[in-house]
Length: 376
Image (cartoon, rainbow, N blue to C red; front, side, top):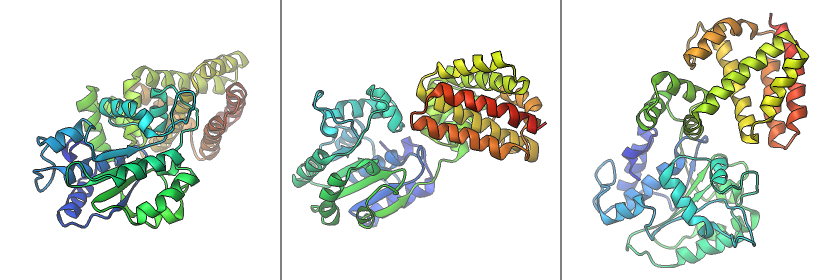
């Protein structure tokens, strides 16, 4: 994976290359940033650049044997550790037992999050961790000599999912790794990571992707028009994982719009039959789609405020959404926006904690009937 093949801040790419060329790369690095900012891809590209036999001033060559092995995820000195659902029945104890599935997904999609990884394995909702067997596997791999005679890399995706036993076992290795060994930890948040691990790493902060760059990426790689790309990036809040997920399931995006329109019309008229019908339609969705629908609703509420108070600036909408909001947005204002956002955020929070969807959305619809009228 080359820097030129991934999206991301050009300044960050240059900084990483400069650190390699000036031999200033720390043995333990924490790639930290919001989900969907391309952190994992940055880490892999940096490892490939360091392993490349003929690197340029800006990128790996992509042609040498080392680069080809990295691109195929078969390089013997490029190791990965990532969360897995431990299972005695399926003989899953560490990343090694899911490496084939990991490689297939990374080669096929390149950008994904933990939910999408678990959907790929049909394990959504189960507890994925980096456990004690993982730490043993890491220690064993890194104790061996480099096959290439250059460097060894351990890329740990989502170290925040590492349990206490695994984390404690890796502390010594992080502090004093074998010569030529580099740890690249790729994290969305350091809140759940042991402070002792954080203190042993050098932070590489990866910012959220720029909207313009993300739009170009979606248009080029997924063949969608500018309007849909802009809308999807706005909805996903520049999270490329979510944006790709939406584009690949484009029908879902239209479903969310249709449901939102029906929800708001039912809330405005307060017709009991309509309220029951829209509740049933939402609860018929899979749990992840219910959560995505709530995120979509929050997106439309934010865009409504933009239309009302910023004269349409920074609005990321498709034509059908603009037409709907040209009439609906006036009902979303300073008299109800705070409570509306609170109710939808609360709904998302409760869904993540396995609340009953039928009760949750029924209650939300009843509250919406009052809040929408308040904005009139």
